[in-house]
Image (cartoon, rainbow, N blue to C red; front, side):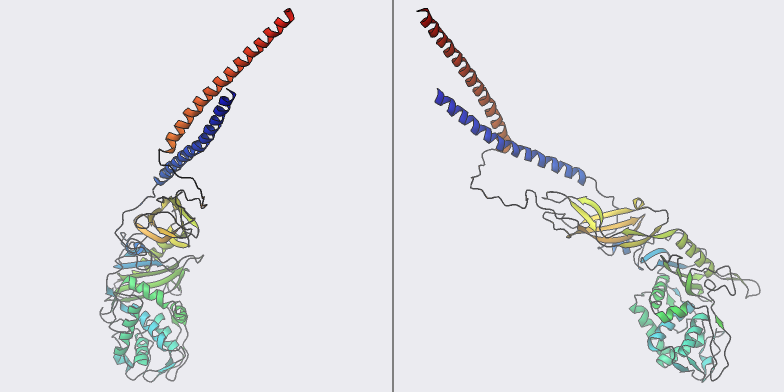
Length: 504
């Protein structure tokens, strides 16, 4: 009997050990199920998306938004037409954002805006101190009733003098003399102008003369003119002349010193007219011809230098009094004033993506956890002054086919767009913040000589183990009780034998 009890207790210990191996497996299975449920709950919180036309990454914010100077959906929209402008464009340089546009790609007569290209092309071939001799018969090669510097045949002037005369007073004789100095004649200079605008990405611009006073034959668009100003002002000399308000030209071999030249851009100079003066305007030209209307191209910088605007208005209506020369409404100056008021008062620059910015948790097929999507560069944009980040909509797109484990930290996993109303403001690549291992991959290799059994799963083994423990527990209790009763019986027998011996 003693041997039987020992064998029983040994079997009980073995089964208890088996149960301790089975129960953790069941617990692990439950924990994994809870983790998957939590992950699925997180995945159900999808980011808000906007319907868009199909476009590759990098072009969404152009085709469906305001990013880059080619952006087709301006941030402020283009529904509100200005009073008289046939075309308008407002572009912020620092953030590469189109804030407002109206008919930006409509081809219109360039007029004297043409002189901006004449000036920048001349600077490609000339030095400021180069001396130019005016060819004979200069007046015969000018448009009728031209604005001029009053240059005369065989007069010697510098390229600097000609450029200031060209951009401050829009002198047509300065344009002709520069063209003849560079290319030998006007006709040879025009192809250089058209070649330059094509190289900087202008698609709607073609010049036929060097001064633009050609009855509307030279054509451009508001967007192209903004590109011309942006590229030309990268040249330090052009930028200086473009922003000048006055210039004193010295005496020449044919003339005494001329009167001080003053700009006609009344937004940057209040010498003649005060109502349009704006200290934020850093340069520009405002021109008028009957064939092209009143046009204007300017640059302007905010007081804190966070915003640099290029503004263009074309085809504005100029109204004169009955005397034919007193101006009632300039058209271009009023339109540009309103455009800048909107750009500076209603908008600001804000960082919409920053390096290390986390966006969302993303499901990873077969992964032990979700991936955290992260942006790794700083991107600024113009936004409405009242806009907060929660007013903007993010559209997070994972790579085709979804994400599957494993994923390495820093691996690109998708792209993200940020939208304001119907305009995509910016795009960025998205990377995984940390690594995601495959489910069950702990990174530790365990080697075992045990042979795996496929007879049933851990849940069944858990139930069988529990039943065995209960049965064996009852058996052990029975054996303990039985041993106790046997010990009592033996004790009673010993007492009886002792009593008998005393009686004897």
